[in-house]
Length: 363
Image (cartoon, rainbow, N blue to C red; front, side):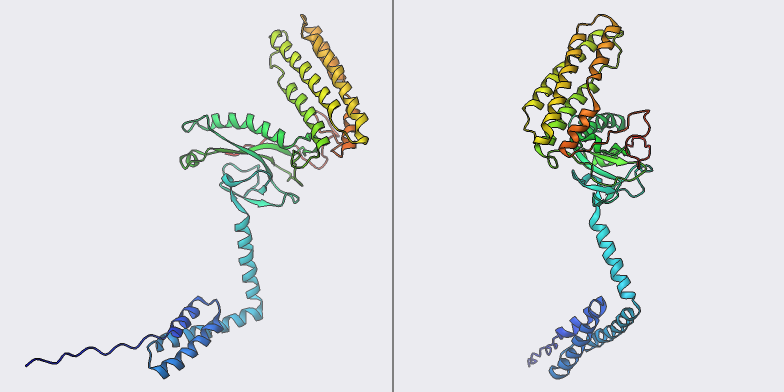
């Protein structure tokens, strides 16, 4: 005789409010909500015969405890301190940037200050108009190396390229504080393995902090300011190309350099005369062009110098043609910095608030 088949009776469903009450009670984000959900769950479970009574009781108990704790925290100010700490941590996280992710124009603070920094993975991005350790002037990729070249090779590349990048970023070198030095972040052996091939160039202060942005380029200058500063920069860059060997050691190289100075001065005098100057600056800008012409003639003469004394005398007269009073007058009319930077060995010039610093290099 066959036995009748019997099925197991269906198991009552677990009440959803009970589950929600337990989760809310554990998380403690909204304790009163967990308490309400727990009471609703207990009422429905009793009426519908559902499972989840233990969950609802546990969620209700946890929510009661959490509600009491939160009430005490608000009464004593503990909650405010907690949320302030949470907000400060969030702000700090938002400001933190990997040195690989820094962008041109961002200002930053380093974890331990630039002077003591040897290697760092992240910095805090800050407002450029508040005191800061450094400002990003640009970056360049190391395409010329197929494999890790070693620190000295990258440093050599960074020193040259970052000087050029900084010069283009801060055309008004008179406005750059004496404390600001060329500084850079470059790949380490470990970051190279992860694909890091970028050198980040910056201005940074190894002692006193920078007080504002040093940027003066096409993004911040008007056309007249840009025309004047680019002419001065072109002449300065040619000056920097003066041979290391003296005339008596390499007369040909020195004569070639003098010819390049003559050509640069001729080009920049023409540029100043062609620029569209505001009325207040036109007279002084044209006076500066005349100084370029006067200096050019002296450099042109020494391109054929045969004697050392003749060469250096001509170069000296060329430099005497530049009058700082004219440069200050042009700058004043254009709204640029009028305080000359301190020259090596000079006292009483430059930024009075800046302290003497040494160039910094970060690896």
